[in-house]
Length: 124
Image (spheres, one colour):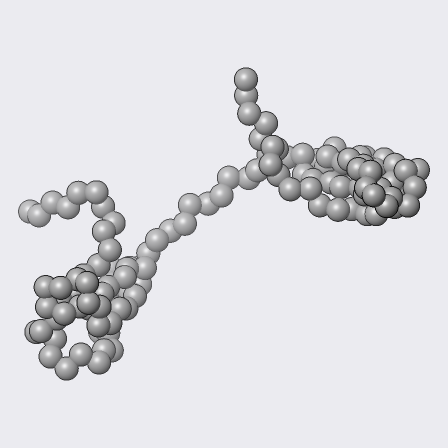
């Protein structure tokens, strides 16, 4: 059995009516659009007309992660972060080097870490 691609898609309220006749008139008006699902629901006071797109979800574009996160820590201690900064990956690739403003006085007494991106790292 194939899953319904519309299952779970939210309905948007198109109108509220005191009588079923008024709600049904609105439902028929909206039903002329074949790309729209329409329904009338009875509520405690009156009726509500709801609609939603009959089209399947458009596939979401995959996010491009081109920013790199760097963490400046105490020397060989990744648990004590002194500073963190972000670098545009495209800019680093194009320029080869990037100068980052920082408040560290002696950079020989710190370690710089980044988040893991790949499952496996190989040195050549």
